[in-house]
Length: 256
Ligand code: 48F
Image (cartoon, rainbow, N blue to C red):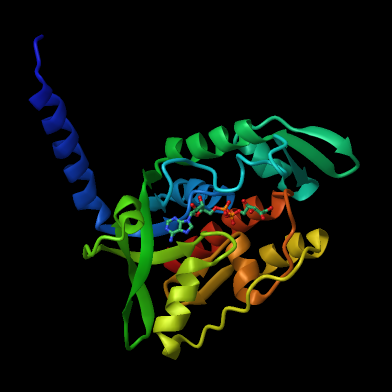
């Protein structure tokens, strides 16, 4: 069947537009395709939510790919083994209760796990603000922009996505909670900024504090450390996965 260049263009524009029209009203927006965001998206999709993950970069995985200082291994602890195995990621017990996984394998399998479950991942899009409503005060979506437009410094108005829940899984800077805290003082959210390393304590507290920060706004992964002023932990990732699963369960509990 002959085709020409215009067909390729038409297909891309038509099929993308169809999806974007659905995307503008979605159940859950997850911001960031790092370990916490991908795990959250995987379980949210499992719970039958419409989920979209917006990722600033043109790649998956956030901090996974870099392993530890570019050594291609990541450590996880016993409590997260079950999640890792659910994604089909191979583990090797190296010390009692500590397992090692391959960084590239984890990156690939978390990503495909989320997508295979039905989550949509849109790359190259940065979330730079939230939508809010009063009475009751709540977050009801996000503002998005092409990352390339931001990098170019062009003055282009963003587009808006409505959702029932937004998950800040943006990592160390907790970008979404930070913008909400700065621009909507009525929410009374204070972002403390993460502290220096204390891995064991941080792994535990990140999971404990994962959850809702305001109506419609949730936080998972390292963003939790930034919001609550918890220590950081370096390349041990169990807490990120447990946090991603916990935020999905909390949204399930709140919305269903
Ligand atoms: O940084 P990231 O991997 O966060 P995480 O899921 O995991 C943290 C670990 O990687 C590691 C650690 C644990 O041992 O300390 O650092 O909490 O992934 C965050 C993703 O969010 C994207 C960013 O490019 C990265 O891929 N991101 C950040 N801000 C935005 C964003 C934004 N405003 N819009 C879209 N994507």
